[in-house]
Image 1 (tube, rainbow, N blue to C red):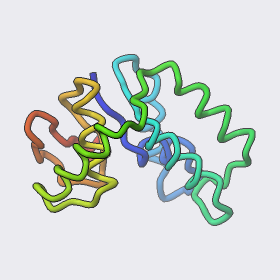
Image 2 (cartoon, helix red, strand yellow; image 1 turned 180 degrees about the vertical axis):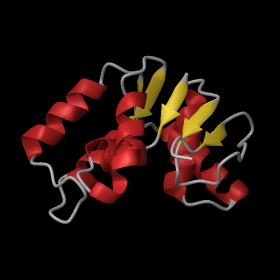
Image 3 (cartoon, one colour; image 1 turned 45 degrees about the vertical axis):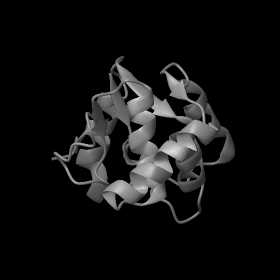
Image 4 (cartoon, rainbow, N blue to C red; image 1 turned 90 degrees about the vertical axis):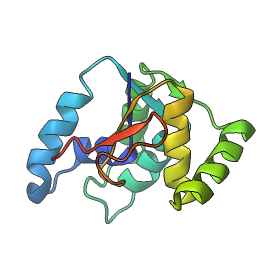
Amino acid sequence: MRFVDTNVLLYAVSTDPAEAAKAIVARALLNETELALSVQVLQEFYVQATRPASRASLGHSDATALVESWLRFPILDLTVPLVRAALVASARWQISYWDAAIVESARALGCAVLLSEDLQPGQDFDGVQVVDPFR
């Protein structure tokens, strides 16, 4: 099982010609089955994808439909234990709270791989390894 960070979802809907290669990779990834997400990732996707200046600038209906389609994957809810784990991880690894929440969501779902370009590729957070799928 691999955990998908928000940037993968955003590249999947990007219409920026400079991101065409990443869009192809992201779309292919999202056709796989052994993936997991979190409520945080879905929230971040919706907010970023519907911004007027975004790479996709989706409307509410289109962004909502995509979020609904991704509910086929295991989704980790936002919980107090997750917030606490992210606070500890943020301090331990000196990463932002938001990145720590992604790492801890992956861990809670039993994912050994975190697909993201936002963290250092190859970094291992005690059993959750970051893989940049666009490299």
